[in-house]
Length: 309
Image (cartoon, rainbow, N blue to C red; front, side):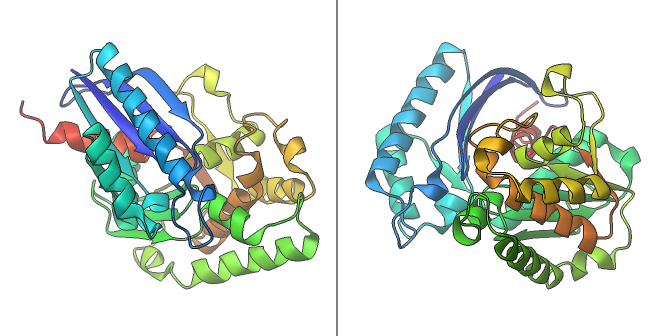
């Protein structure tokens, strides 16, 4: 059967169509997305502007038509921190339901971490033993660790690359003192939360997911996306430290010329590097294996698990 999932994130809204069956590997069949940038298109109080909500409804309507054209039997949609935290988020959700018929599932931060962990577990398998997963999104950082498909620990922190860039890194590029201050703040906030993850001991495999992690790994020399998802990719702490230092001296235009970095994500990349480096240092890992699956795939897998055989 064909499933369609509409992912409403802090940066993009993405329709992914997959051919999927219970017990089988979901195969991407069609992709359609737009850079709506919900987290950046807000009023001073954090609420979602009317125009942004208009574009969201229009794009979801467009996605539904595309899904029908692609022969999709089941469409579901979810949203993360940008909609979850907006003061008028419930109003936007109700408007989407009323005008498109789509019931948005607004995930909690811990649910994001758990579903991403499920995707990573299924991708790398049981032979990976105890997993540690680091997922940097636009609005939040998700951390999870465990031995099963459901993690023992799942944490969400307001340390997303887009959020940090918007709220704390103002220059292009930011000054050395501003960067140093933000780096220290990230580490202090993260250090206050990592104890539950360390209690279980060192992971057998540490994994990074998300567009930010993939971009950082590509800068470090990982294989380009065109070589396919099954090529092993990784990111070391030493490489990440050098990349963070390099990015701190580059403006957005310069970053967008780096391999694997899109123009839309270039502004956030320094913040993402600072968060990734802090996570690796404080979680005491030297390398992150990069997983091509993340939250979206985790939700698809969970939905397949609950379908009738």
